[in-house]
Length: 201
Image 1 (cartoon, rainbow, N blue to C red):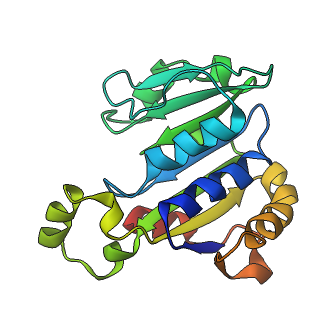
Image 2: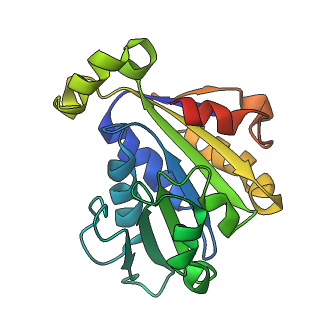
Image 3: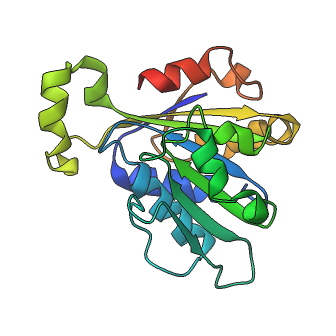
């Protein structure tokens, strides 16, 4: 299912609404170009989950663990941008923490799926991505994010656990003010080709 968000504030509200449906063992795989809002989403998710520590892009540390302040699951924030393949991701030994944590992997498409057959793909795309060529995109990476805060967010659940949850996720997020939703009828089923669409964005 695809959601249309008009501002970064809506992105924060969106993340908080999704956080209400997360539990220990969940794996979220984030896809999006530089500046798309992946870290903004994760920061908002962490705030809603009430975890400790400042959430920043973990490019050089690769993975950070943010313990819960209220006895809930920790948030494990991973940046796979510098990893060459799934073997390097496996070397991080995330499996040992996966069952007890909520794990978010940025740039993880094509690698992080091996961690769990149950996972949620989240693809974030600025609206300017849809009509911008590569040369313009390079300049846009350095632009102020606030110039155009509109985003599309695609959610695709994989596995039985997410198939059961997606209708409620869709209902709760659709109830947010000014959030437009596409494909509500198929929200509970992973769409064929969704992973490929995420790779393109």
